[in-house]
Image 1: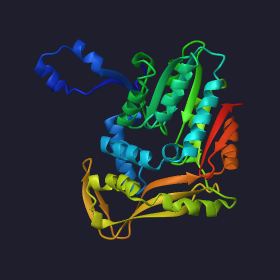
Image 2: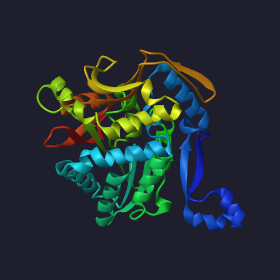
Image 3: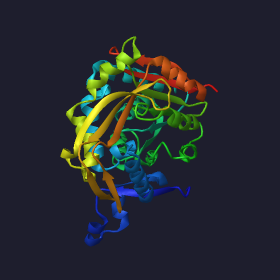
Length: 358
């Protein structure tokens, strides 16, 4: 295995309790799963990324999912507000897109589903179920930055795919240079690869994530990609129209938990949501959540003194809004083309079936 990856076993038992009870390792195996952790999520790198985030006042999104507490809060938020969970039409277009992707694999016997940024894995689990119903053998690789989220995705899928055919990966997609090679190493002769990239486009810088995505997708692969959209004919007005959707109690609690767990107090400032231009000058707009300090705060984080002053601003979150045309224009330079798309009636969510054409 590449030196940047490490395989670990995750179990619901504490090793100390197991040893005290006198059990051997063999007795643990029914309660264990194997997962691969990339060095982008090794403790030393996580510490370095955390300190860099705080110094730059721009928080790496992975820290909003990294801990078990953050992951649980995000999963609750997703359940309450995701169009695929709350909007019947949103759920309908996801089902249509998943069925279309499954149908595109009609000529093969084995399908490897790869969930990049898998989240809780509910959509991928439905996809796996449709593939099984069509008589396909399936394998599944849930991939996310959070160990807790990856384990949740695997657990959701285990009713459909066996543990031996599930290969969970924990990594930072934005910095994992070896991911494409690792996924290639999991390939089985004659298998089709079906890649999902749900919920990642809004919270990723397009010029950083799209080259990595293009490096993973092979010519024969099928990819389903989702994007949050700006509704209506006026792009900027559409982005401003959805701004209130972000400013709610669950979202604020999820975002502020990161700061409060580090030692920031609620009285130190306030969280504000606003519409901003893409810093790369692409013409895209995004919704940002920034914490505005109204008083100073000093705290120790990972052995380093971190200080904030009144007037400091910390960017906790951003979410890009696209249009269907902008998605196609962004993918084109990376050799990716949209073959089919599904848009919600609200025009706030889109799913795009893509293939490599160059």
